[in-house]
Amino acid sequence: MVQFITFEGGEGAGKTTQIRLLQNYFQQLKIPCLATREPGDTALGGLIRKVLLEVSADVIAPVTEVFLYLADRSHHVAHIIVPAVSAGKIVLCDRFTDSTLAYQGYGRGIDIAWLRELNNAATGFTRPDLTFLLDCPVEVGLARTAERKYEAGKPREDRFERETIEFHEKVRAGFLGLAQNEPARFRIIDAAKSVKESAADIRAIVDREFLNELR
Image (cartoon, rainbow, N blue to C red):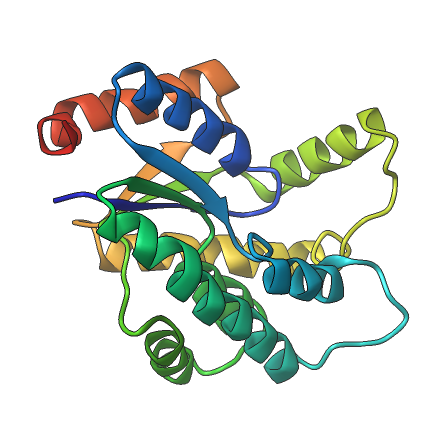
């Protein structure tokens, strides 16, 4: 049964918006649902998110970055994801283990096999039942992020938004490679489309493939 659904993708792909729209759809259908995110959806996670994403003069070493994410993930799984799934809720999560593989593995060059072992240790082998990969060209995603921050009056970039185009291309290629290797779990969504069109594509997949299981 599909209970744990993750949304993955690069900067500006629209994960948060699409999670909110799918959550609203499930609520209309009276399907119990919880939306959450990584990092930062617990009190401890909020502190870790602040360290990881805020602009700082301090350089965080790649392996240090990994362990900070894993600390958040371990706490998140134990205190939010597993209890919600055990209570019969559908969990929609903005980023999970695939982000570590894409960003720290493909992007930073850390050994993928080692990262998989660490993910398993941090999550107790908790894995998504379904993953929507929101994919769009790097330039499109970064432009959206910059526009969103400008409109919100928040001109500062976080640490990942300041990375080079080459880094983000590696991350995108990493996500697509992960999806290619696990076609049964991943569904790739063309996130270059409008919000409405992408939401319709996600809903069509849910209706066609999983809705009977979710009711």
